[in-house]
Length: 359
Image (cartoon, rainbow, N blue to C red; front, top):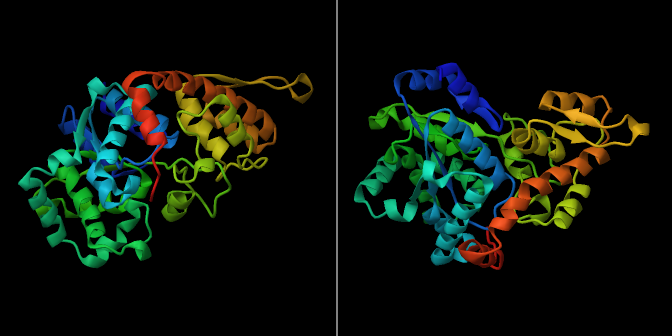
């Protein structure tokens, strides 16, 4: 596979930006199988963004002939007081995440799973964290606090300052060439990139993916220039009505989609359009939107540009789009629901489902 094809795979939606594409090209030209990583704070049930969207992007990276590391960031969740600050429950949630990604299509045998609680046993890990901290001002550290899903004003405890230092060190400790995380993690990935050469490492490539919009009407613009707005409006497990969870029944999907924000002819900030762009049209080559003949008959959708064009011109009504969204999501989630019907997967799901979700 040539370099341009590999770059195209890495650039596919939901990728939103690459810093920089030239660095990525040079990396792929000089390293046969570079390593990418993403870290996951284990807290609550997986939804479309943290489950299916992540599985889609991981597969792109694997198809581009890269290794992939899934970092189960259990200590990060502990610092952030997720799952009530219960470390054992946080670890069980990490096991649930692995089952969830398997159900969403990640071949666990083709990725490497690493736990922060394991790497934290290594004194060299903490030396690296200290090296990051020695080269980062307190002000810069606090400015990175949105990676925790918190505003700067919410930073009250010293442990919270460790979080961005640990995250900025992770790619060097893991020997990851590509930092493949969400747009909300940009403060930490850019810090890693800024400090790399100072600490004696090569600059890492940052590949940031889009944050799937929540189902309710958001605030402001949703472009990559407006990261804070994108974070504020994203699908969130702490706001259940904004999210389609990977376990949702057909009835739950229908209720949420029918109540979702989807104004006629409006693309920007439209969560239903986003679900098609980042999930449905990545999982299906073709999708037929059923309509009555008096409204023009069925529409066959083969790519996102086609969908956007129909919708912007008013040739596709929100209700017809929502109805097919329900059908497609139910079809995608049905095998995932079945995966969690028995054995260890069911046990883990019940444990996480019944836990109190804290932020």
